[in-house]
Image (cartoon, rainbow, N blue to C red; front, side, top):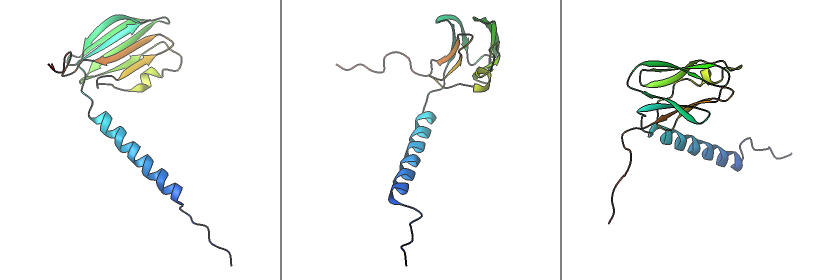
Amino acid sequence: MTERKKLIRTGDVVLSVALILVAIAVTLLTATRDPGARAVIRVNGSVVAILNLDQQETVGVEGDLGVTVVEVIDGGVHIISSPCPNHTCMKMGFVRMKGQMLVCVPNRVVVVVEGGEQEGVDGIVG
């Protein structure tokens, strides 16, 4: 009689535990991000607009292909229209946490959420 092969091996258990730990770490890191205070819009690296996330506003910025329309609503920012062919930037959804960004590569438009509760010096040692 031949030995039955194990359905679950030690490597499978180790890999599963590692993936669960990575998922928990990513969840904790993203959950502890500070909410942003403003959205900075850049075209070809130059700042063209700064929008406060606490005020509802819509702005159109001229990129290489045409106008990309960015909207701030409910403390978040998203791209509502863009002349790019695949509209990937429009599918990125809302961003509202410090460090998150929206990018329209073909039109060279980048929206970065900045600011938050603390800016500048954290403390002085001496």
